[in-house]
Amino acid sequence: MSINGKVALVTGGSRGIGRAVALRLARDGVKVAINYKSNAEAAQWVVDAVTEMGGEAMAVSADVSKSERVEAMVKQVADSWGSIDILVNNAGIIHDGLLMRMTEEVWDEVINTNLKGTYNCTKAVLKFMVRKRWGRIINVVSVVGLEGNPGQSNYAASKAGVIAFSRSIAKEVAGRNITVNSVAPGYIATEIVADLSPEFKELIFSRIPQNRFGTVDDVANMVGYLASEEANYITGEVIRVDGGIEL
Ligand code: NDP
Image (cartoon, rainbow, N blue to C red; front, side, top):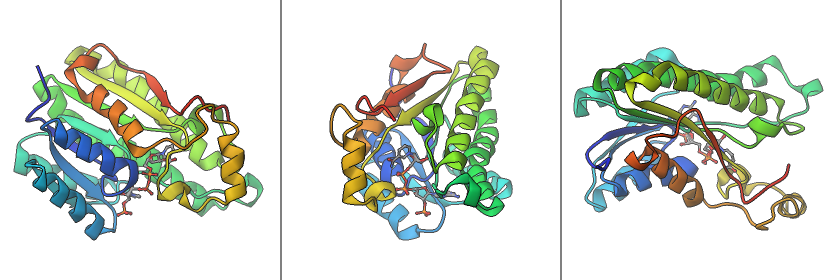
């Protein structure tokens, strides 16, 4: 039993963690649709890398916060490959600031991308999984969604929302052989953390027993495992990939 030949949609699959997830699934023989919002060149890079490995990939653009765009994207993938078996809700943004100064626009931007985007994609894809009585939904959240973090109330709320959403959907679809889990990374070395000051990086390292940022592959390996047949009996879980961090 393997997931070879299955079809995955990875949101935000063009960069960072999503790119590593797309490459990992492709290595497992999965056909991968790589969603992106605006950077077509980055998405094409991933498609080319998968093709060079002998796999199949396509780049699909859609702002996940827009339901009509998500519906059209899901139709495009299903029309080409017949179904979607694995959904990785990875697309996410941060827009940090203390609550006293946080505008409604900034709040909505983060909630709409991270939380509503997860709702839009999950709803659009679920019918294919229900029909096939097999599916894997993996949501990339954050330890911040479990513990909170000053300056990140919008981001923390969006990720905590995804965790509660994930646990609820896991119960709704468990009888259809569909698992729904969340992976909660700590600090991972991507563009999202590249701009942190050296002082702030030192402060973060002091809270991470492994004394380093995680790699995108640390997260992709867990997503790959949850997508596999071996993870058949794991659902409604949140698995931390964080080097032991205490926020
Ligand atoms: P990056 O900023 O490196 O990449 C973000 C990806 O999401 C890009 O592919 C981007 O596409 C896409 N994206 C952004 N907004 C949208 C949108 N509205 N619709 C569709 N795609 C969109 O992010 P990371 O790899 O660092 O983060 C990935 C996930 O992991 C996020 O959910 C993040 O919250 C989570 N995470 C990251 C951590 C870290 O330390 N890096 C820690 C904990 C969680 P494009 O370039 O076209 O805009």
